[in-house]
Length: 341
Image (cartoon, rainbow, N blue to C red; front, side, top):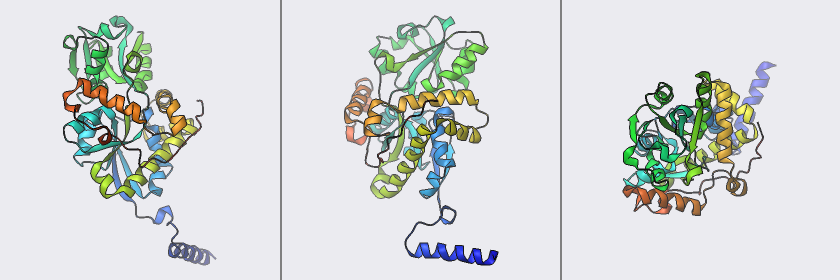
């Protein structure tokens, strides 16, 4: 009987293949893909692990390895150089890289509302942007918040020459802040819960300065696609974007399960903090525009504002055409229903 069942299953599979039906996932020859993040994985990245765990990438023909990043500028440079197949990074970093010759576009927006932030402690006396003058701020050269800080400084009349930057790796930021080696650090708002928890443990007060609350709400992190892939392998790019955004949409509708999946792949991360990180990520994804036009979609007006803002404060970006920065060409129309959690 077992032999007959196996023979029947094989015959059914062969018949399906002959009829042009897609092969079962286990029979598909998946292409090995390296996907580079902007940072060390934490709760905001849960949606990508959903695409991995639920088989959305595999169904699209990809065998994906997710790699940690060291800041968006570094991620964009690595991706532009062809070191990885796809990447996730900040739009400002893309604009600046394009100004230097990198051929990379944003192909799907995830952080629709800017997440750039300054994390500090109440004990430092930093209450607003102007209080950053004369202070030490920690961050890596590639941190997105550091890349756009000159724009933030000019908008808020901060004398940037009075800010001292202390170079450090992303994992060193929190320990350096709590040890008093710096007065503040650049981060994403999704990291806020981690700093808040550490502050509570240390018996200190925590404060966050969100750039978007002080005049700098730009498009932030999205999925990237190189120009050569768009021109030569559009179907490959489309399959990648669709499969990844399918994971994003599923995560919005199943947030608790998405966090569980993330923790399964990243057991060293505190689950409560991961949940808080992801909750903020969803809030910055599910804007009014995303609910109207679909997640990932980039409005020409806001992208123009983003490009013009960066160009206003960075000479490298002044000749970057708007159409070179982004494309909505590969986006599926996905309108997930947000589930509170």
